[in-house]
Amino acid sequence: MTLPPDVRVIERGWLSSNNILLFDGDQATLVDSGYVGHAAQTVALVKSAMAGRRLRQVLNTHSHSDHIGGNAALQREFGCGIVIPAGIEEHILNWDENALLLAPAAQRGDRFRHDAVVRPGDTLVMGGLEWRAHAAPGHDMDALVFHCPEARLLISGDALWEDGFGIIFGELLGNPGALAATRRTLDMLAGLRVDTVIPGHGAPFDDVDSAIARAYKRLAAFENDPSRMARNAIKACFVFNLLDLEGLPRTELEAYLGRVPFFRDVGVRQLGMDVPMLAGWLLSELKRAGAIAIEGDAIVPTMAA
Image (cartoon, rainbow, N blue to C red; front, side, top):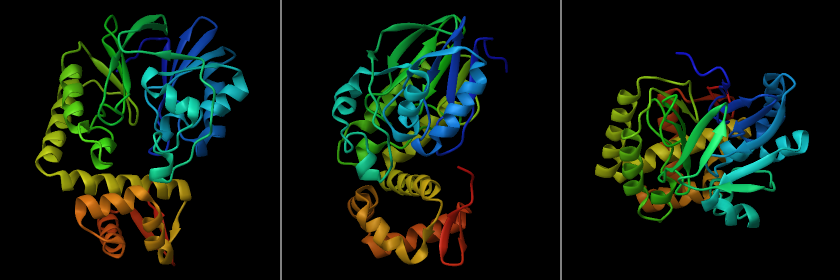
């Protein structure tokens, strides 16, 4: 698979989103900036990849911590502008840690100042190509994706991965409508002319029809059994947090789950589990899946951040 010459993907891992650099002469735009815990690494990677170019702006697909976490550090280092989806502007202005899911999910962020917003239907020139912003609600109800019809290329954020999509937080946090919005987003994506997808996590891929089919299958499973969606979300979010924490004493697991609203509330509301029951189930499930290991008294992730 060959991307256009002025589009470069810095593939990251689970804790940080991919960083997508688009070059226009001696300037560059970066789409998504990773997690705050990786901010210094992100700055170094971007500086190396730009090879003397100037970072003009950072553009975010959505508001989650693994996509906006490097914004402040990049702004300090390069003096770049930051462009955000219009739907999250109030949350950023007020640094609303509940709306940004930082407080409910016990994740970290670094406050930044944005310079402009982008709305669905807007066009942007990046990497010598014209891109159109499309609303992609579901994982984040204000998320955007960026489509280049000329290159048949899609920057999908967490709306579409090669094997699914991001956690549908809204449905789990008592805001119904996110599941239906996810289906509308998949319908929209299926209607775009796309040969290659650059996702928020994972390598770029070109078997787009198969990826969309898998996403529909996953969504149907969640629609038919919302508890499956809740189980998947708790496991994925806990592993994310464990990567950030770099481990957690086993004796502190129940207390940790009890003070993180996302785990505690979803466990009770969607799964009917109190905190001790949730802790036992979660530990068993993640050990069985090979996602964690027990080293002495510590629960540690088995994957790299």
